[in-house]
Amino acid sequence: MTRTGEQPLDRLLYTITCGLLHLLGRFPYPWRQVCAGVIGRLLFMVNRKHRRIAHGNMKRAFGDELSAEQIDAVVGRVFENLFHILFEFGWSQSLNDQKIDAHFTIHGYDDYQAAAAKGKGILLLTAHFGNWELLPIIGHMHNVPFRVVYRPLDTPFLDRIFKESRSRYGGVPIPTRRGAMRQIYKTLRKGYPVAMLMDQNVDWYEGAFVDFFNHRACTNTGMALLALKSGAPVVPLFLIRAKERFHAVVGPELETIRSGDLTKDVERNTQLYNRVIEIFVKRFPDQWFWVHQRWKTRPDCPWPRC
Image 1 (cartoon, one colour):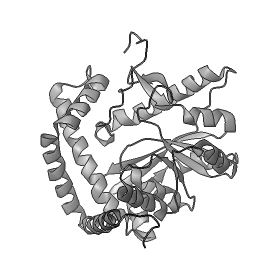
Image 2: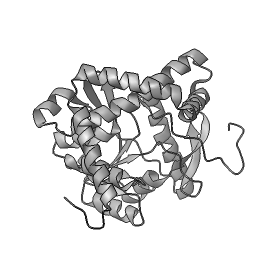
Image 3: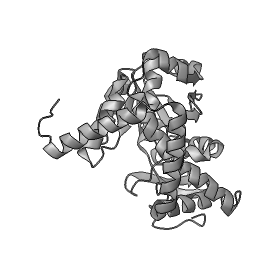
Image 4: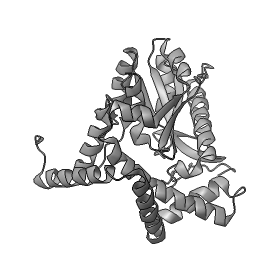
C-alpha cells in the first residue's frame, strides 16, 4: 500500500527489504544459525569501528574479570547475535499462535499480574538484549498489547518496516517525539503496559549520571519520572534466547524510591534500573548490544570513578 508522501525510492527499498526478510525467515533453524554465525564473524573481522567500541565497552565493564582473549570471544558472539536478530526478525513475520507457543515461554507472569492488578498501568523495564524486537509477541500471548517507546529511525523505509513489525502482534509504538510523555501518561491511566528500553546513552540534558558497571553513564530519567508521578509499577522484562526457544523473564515489581526530594528520587530509581539491566547483561553478556557507545556522554565534572 502506497503511503502519502512516500518517496518512490523509499517504496522500492521497502519492497525489496521486506522480500529479503521474508526469504531469510524461511530458512530452517540450522541454516539460520550457520548463516548468522558466518556473517557475524565476517562483520567482526572487517568492522573495526564497532569492534573497537565493543572491546572498549567490555573492557570497561569486565576488565578485571575477563582476559583479553575472553573479551574477544564474547565480542565475536555479539556480532553473531546481531545477525541472529536479523534472521529471527524475518522468521517472526509469519508466526502463528501455534508456533509462538512452541518457541516462546514466559517466566514470572504472576509478578506481571500482581502489578497489573493495581490498575495504574505498568512500566516494563527492558533493554537492547536478546532479541528485543520480538517483545510484542510476549504481550500477544496473553492478549495484552504492549506499548513500546522507540526512537524513529532516520531511514524512512527501515522505520516503516520496524514500526509495522512492532504493531503486528498488537503492539503500539510510541515514538520519542514532542508530546511522548503525555501520550505515555494517558496510556498508563488506561491500564496498558508501556515498555521502555533503558540501556542507551543520552545527552546530559536528557538524563542523569548514575553507575552502570561501576562507571558513570548518562541514563534516561523518563521511566523514573513516570513511575514517581503516575504511581505505575515498574516491572523488569527481558527476552533471552536459548537455541530455538525464547524465554521471557518477568521480574518482581521494583519498589519506587520516594523520599520527597524529586531530583534524588529520580537519580536513585534510575540507578536501580541500571542495576537490574546489569544483572541480565552479566548473566548473558553476548546477548547485549555492546556496539553502542553507552558511556559516550561524560560528566562536566568527572567523578573519581569515571
